[in-house]
Length: 232
Image (cartoon, rainbow, N blue to C red; front, side):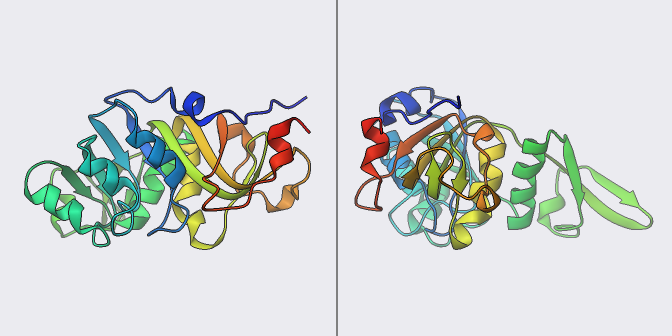
């Protein structure tokens, strides 16, 4: 019988330690794992490296961890929706590695697929190629980009079951999907939780094989089927 992966958030997040790398899902405020980030704010951890599309939206999201001094580096596509990130970078409190959006998504996907890296023409002739290995094939230049594997991934799904099969909504699929595959330990917060077998298997975006722990999303953000947590 499939394992019930629903656990208290304290247990799910206990694997996170200082110095770890964390892949975080979400896309400009859509599908951000805010429940997990809120809990991470209460933990005595720091020196974290974050991989994600952005640092949140305005004052919510990873930017809150940066304000607390828990993050040393962010690898992201842009930081324009969180002014505090730019301020922290300019003041030398945070290292930011800007990475083209498609490149970052492929870094995560390749890591999840067990690939060492990939070639991309994006960034050729710009500062993005500085310090990178350039490969020429059939007269065209490419940047050799290493894939990324993280210690932990924090993701959020619109619907999921107790084994960790997940369904996302809209643009929240953009980075939650690759983030779920590129980490050694994956925690998913779920808005609408079902028992195993209730979800249409053809609608699943992330298989439960990738997910290690499932927690309930903050009730302020969603509706949860209480019977799942009452052993029914």
